[in-house]
Length: 384
Ligand code: ADP
Image (tube, rainbow, N blue to C red):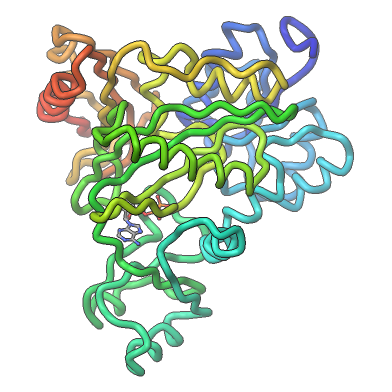
């Protein structure tokens, strides 16, 4: 594969922070890139060779963009899959493959996929609309609490709600959805698996995700997860099973619940670089972004081990602040041990919008975790 310093082009659908960080390696390896994003000031714009402004859900836009590239990937799942299918038929290499995206774009379809492949997952019922869901509650077929999930793709917890009463149902969005069994989990874990077209597979160590109590958003990611090695092996094995079922190319982040009795359930997957793998930039032999690029170009997979323990903390917009972003006190964290800030370059902050992250590396995970808390308490993402 002659991708290094050649005329071959890698296209990326989406120009957010995941695309921007993928471009660190394309710059390092001198791979030519095109990026499509609706936002003219998308974070990835600065680091690509050609930026195209356009709608990722529009068939003609995605098709025309794809016709210009040799390999096409995504950094966001909400893209026009029909255009990708046509491009694939016409010989463009598309990773993740359109069939993978089609399965995961709909949460109900994704859950049925796990059932079909006998992959452990929380039980669920599917509903065409909220009236049907209400009826099921009235008939006693569904009892509180349960987790409502919109079938169509949500993002960062926006299409997910824990329902504890009829009043909670009234606040839900209309449309196709599912009610999932509420899992009183002990921990949330994730395993990133990467596969190249030749079938070579690499799995990263298990990470632990700590969530913000109300925003349903990851606050800290810890690598390694604070679990025993038997559970870690089990989690990696399930992630490999999920990976084999999808037959994807590129990264697949598998999000898992560890229940109080040691069971591991698959929550959902993301076939792209993932927030739970940002720590790999500082802590791993091969970052998730480099690994994804290796897979896209059918190169050998890199070593996934960590060189050091790491904790990542997301920098999200503070509630009550909207507008031009200001990272208050960010200079103060630079004297802390093992700290690397990442600023995505989004001009505007909004409550809970992911604006950046900070990685803390340290030989001791508990020390890294307490420095991460100090970072979280010090930096404020506000508007000015
Ligand atoms: P998104 O696609 O928005 O990331 P997820 O399905 O990952 O949505 O859900 C977001 C978060 O909501 C999860 O990480 C978890 O904290 C919580 N959650 C989701 N499903 C369940 C469940 N069945 N039981 C308990 N909590 C859940």
